[in-house]
Length: 296
Ligand SMILES: NC(=O)c1ccc[n+]([C@@H]2O[C@H](COP(=O)([O-])OP(=O)(O)OC[C@H]3O[C@@H](n4cnc5c(N)ncnc54)[C@H](OP(=O)(O)O)[C@@H]3O)[C@@H](O)[C@H]2O)c1
Image 1 (spheres, helix red, strand yellow):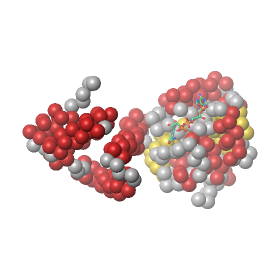
Image 2 (cartoon, rainbow, N blue to C red; image 1 turned 90 degrees about the horizontal axis):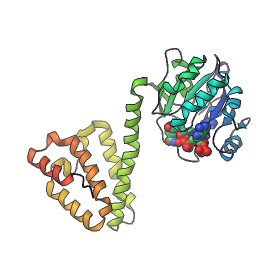
Image 3 (cartoon, helix red, strand yellow; image 1 turned 60 degrees about the vertical axis):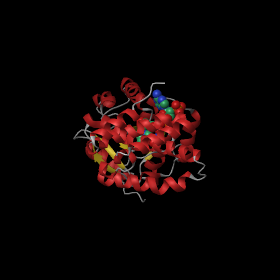
Image 4 (tube, protein in one colour; image 1 turned 180 degrees about the horizontal axis):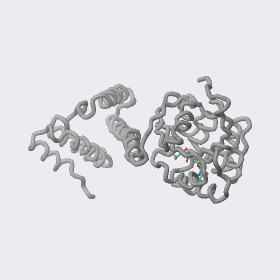
């Protein structure tokens, strides 16, 4: 991606939290035409890693010193630490009008940034809906990624521009629904992956050497169908009301892989909840009994 950031909107960036996302953003913002001049928080080793990746970036043990060098502070700490960082910045008097403070947590809106706004800084919550693994430093990972942007009417334009600078696709998300938004992404990403992990273990139990060969096309198509048509795309024994097949699955799991029995029940109950209205009352009742969680 070539940068289209205008010289007038170039920012001096301080990254607070040089972990997975902080490191990637340090590189991506520089490539987008901003200047990542400071990095703070985390271990000395992780700060030095960022410094090695971004020319002109200085490490700081102290977030206040980093913010003093910058006019855009990007907070990429764990979600629970954001408010503490903002409080430290606000108490130090380092923030003023002209500063911008952004966090990248999907689960939080503007509340943890409130003290920064009181200091006169522009604030925004900008969350990339992308999984960023350890070691990722290629800014192309963010190109085309949708971002949830929560900002006041005053701050929305620059926040959207910042996302666009990174090749992202900004979407306005209201402050009061950030929790639901993030829960949706978490289920879509983590729960789907958890289901695949369970499926993979079952196929290995069935002495399938290469579970990905079976699961890859099947999972991809199932996800694709569900993405397009929602619950109408669901298939399988629970959806058909095939009580005997579900009972047989539970029997073999109990015999061969008992540690996966509850995971199967849990996942099947989620399916049952989505398709119950389509089943005969008798089949639904039998499935309810089979799939009820066992306490021991
Ligand atoms: N990874 C993803 O896929 C992803 C995607 C979108 C958004 N996000 C969001 O990005 C943010 C960071 O997530 P991540 O996955 O990059 O986490 P991470 O890899 O654990 O990085 C967090 C960084 O913050 C540092 N840190 C911890 N507490 C701090 C504090 N009080 N002050 C300053 N620095 C502190 C950590 O240092 P230590 O390592 O020394 O503890 C680490 O360098 C979170 O808000 C997350 O929700 C993550």
